[in-house]
Image (cartoon, rainbow, N blue to C red; front, top):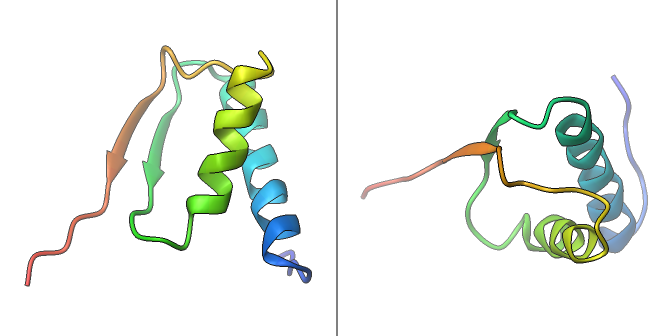
Length: 69
């Protein structure tokens, strides 16, 4: 297990890079995505990478966590 230590920005960028590697290796990946504010930095990095042409999510399927109270 790798333990990542650093700023929120650094951790978000590293996690986004893992998503990018996965999607580029398997464009039809199925991803489980978290909701809430915790992953916003990761998602911002993914949007940036998409705009730069480094990754495409056109064939990716996602599912999202939902909590009902």
